[in-house]
Amino acid sequence: MNLSESKTDIDELFNTLHQQVTELQRTASIAKQTQNLSPIEKAGQRIRAERKKQGLTLNELCDLSNIAYVTLVKIEKGTANIRLESLMSVANALGMKLWIG
Image (cartoon, rainbow, N blue to C red; front, side, top):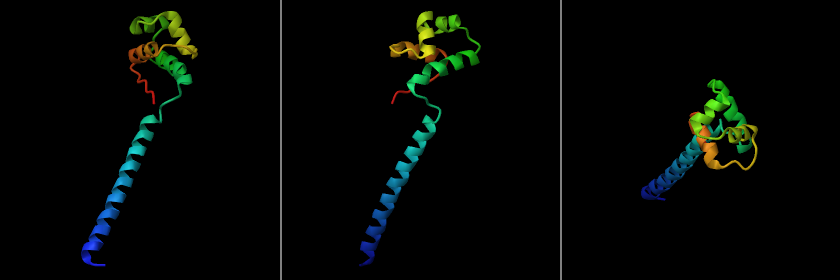
């Protein structure tokens, strides 16, 4: 093996290691971003907790989000068949992010 072949082997090894480190960094970044996420079934609980934390009543959040009182109650109870648009409106009104993925 000559010097040129050794350099090529080292370059290939470096590139492979670089790709692996980049992938690990990406995975770690995603894990960090998702550590506070919860499944959709718990979205209502988190919305209710955030509403109370901000000292808002159901009626005040209805006004801020343009969502009907009955719909907001269903969201907080975790009732199925809530439109995504409604859930997004409530989350936005509370300054929360809704991530689907």
